[in-house]
Length: 172
Image (cartoon, rainbow, N blue to C red):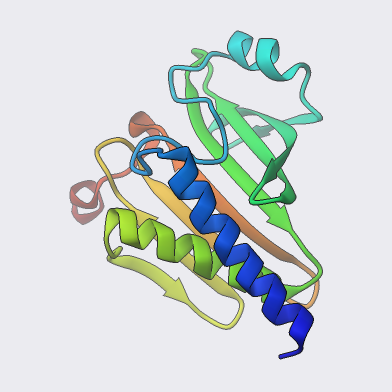
């Protein structure tokens, strides 16, 4: 590993730690990458952020995308609302040509989430896909990374309790 990659990895770790500590947010309910919560309305979003960069239909409803700086990385935040106007999920995504960078970011975020929320019982760890889900009363938290020769992304998602699936529901 060359010096630039070591410095980048250390910087990402330091920024991640500072971000979680400085924000003082309860990771079980408050996404560290936004000031919004599940009570935020579409009108609140537009008032604070303006018109979205893009919008699309998603599994969780109408999704609105905004450029977002989190961990000193230029990524994208997506807010989705159901047909009744309730926010269903919030996702921060960061794309990179460097798969190792994505894996490092994932590992740093995973460590912070695990330190705050405990170990997850649901994890995937393959060469091209890393994923974890924490099933909480306040809603599921999902962390995923996809690393391929064509596509590298890390995604950090908070789902509202109404759109989350509990461990008990999975067993039914």
